[in-house]
Image (cartoon, rainbow, N blue to C red; front, side, top):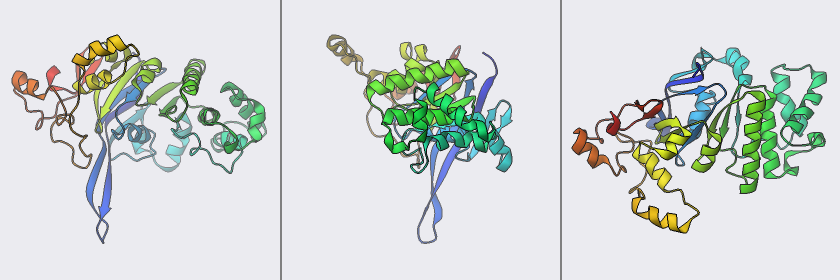
Length: 333
């Protein structure tokens, strides 16, 4: 593959929680902890995991909506973490975000023409006299009519509002878009329409996506590669087909075994091989010292016997177990 469009190295995002009368920070939440991954130009990288695993925080940290605690985010060779003020604002139009809640992400007091036209005006992408025409073009591009430009967000359905959110992201003429669970608040039939729209726009405009979701079937449909997160860390990363056909990490295997199959006979046959996890996800305030997944892993005794490694004290390295297939598990080191 070519050089990455976005290259994330050892990225961490820790939040301090103040407590007590003096509000001294006593606890640290490790929302994202030492994550490294590449996003190549023109691809869709899917990011999946349970709620609270740090997916959205990772996406926001890449876009510098949160200033990372440590690590680097290289965009076309420029480290975004080192940029501040005007230097960062000049880069903002190159990477945009599609938010999960299509209503909360739109200003209810602004008309659609102003919402979509604002990025064009701020980044001086078009003369002011041409912004209205450009807004109407983008509306038609996302499947809406130009008459919608003079309406307010509350006049639209959820699917239409998400199309407006996509249009606003496109208005800045970005190369890279982080889609933070863009379909989770929509009906199933509308979800398919939004996914197909995003794929068509990617082909038409040569876009690159980081697609965040918890629905593995949807992510497989839209993604070229997939990364699986757990407790702030990436557990596995490879192409979408390999994740489904040959998952290596025990956590990935458990996620896939939980996906229901719409065939009663096959579902019954699979019951014997279903991977059931015990216990709760540890708190990001006090994660395990070793492998992040060790407290729930059904194969930790196998690691201890075969590798003579205690997963609870020794953290695995994120290594390339097979060509193009990365995982953080002692079974493959």
